[in-house]
Image (cartoon, rainbow, N blue to C red; front, side, top):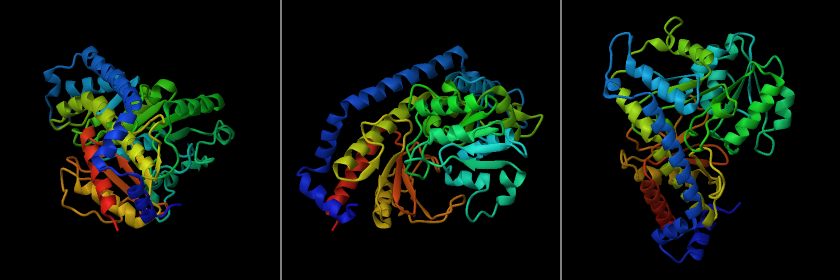
Length: 428
């Protein structure tokens, strides 16, 4: 593997142009990719607009109620809009979900019972989900995990860093209650799962056990493709509102969509049996969620364009970065492998320095609840933890990968990349 500082010399020797010119040339070569992204944006924007019109969204749906949150017509219409866009029998969009992990946990604890079996189809899931399941190495909350409740768990190991479909088919049987399909790669180097791959997984699972719940962690994937997982065989999906579907303006929360019986079970875990999706004051957040959801296809489109540009730039200067600029996209995340801690930290600090909020702050690696390794996070965001806003983070473990994601507008990503290139030029 090429040393980081050797790579800098390669960069200096190959490109006798300034960073701005390098980016402009890269953009010209990406016209075809950008046109595809624009077409997906237009398709999804039309889909969202039609859902708003069909459900007669009006100013009265932006008003709030207090207390128990009963008779909230805005919340009711919001759920219908989400359900129509994601092609679900039922959906809930709530600010009460603390994170994407909380949203996913409500689905797991709501739909699984002692003795049921859960299988992760693409190796180990994201770090925080290992805490929920109970498989994290030094887990102080194992007594509250799925395993502690008598739920069985297994994984389909990756094959050549991809889904092992043959082994998946062997492992699914009548005892399998649910499969967990994590669309995005998380803190791994495997490929994110395209809608086409998710469809193949669902077909294999349903062939072996028609009653098995196909549950998709949809985080980072919404509106990147024209179809969503429920359209290709999934039974249940969930995600965070401070990622793609919040459009960068929703302040907190998550959503769940799918077959009504599974959404209802998850809702009972968010609130309580007998309340489910019928309670919970929304604290005057309706308009932000409606508006953010409406903006989401265009915001996601800009984030994807930024990721494609980053892929092109890193490819040209000799980095191992995935997916490649000309590969089909299914999420907003771009991996950059540094193979050493120092350049990973340097990259994250560059992103932080170009952030609109806390741009003066220097991120350092730190232990974060839910993660076994130290993590460095660059995220000078308007909404804390928002990853539809431009951010970069990575665990301090081999191969020292930065996960670049987001960008409320494409120009912001360009500016950050130009700054990174300038820093490379001046590195010794």
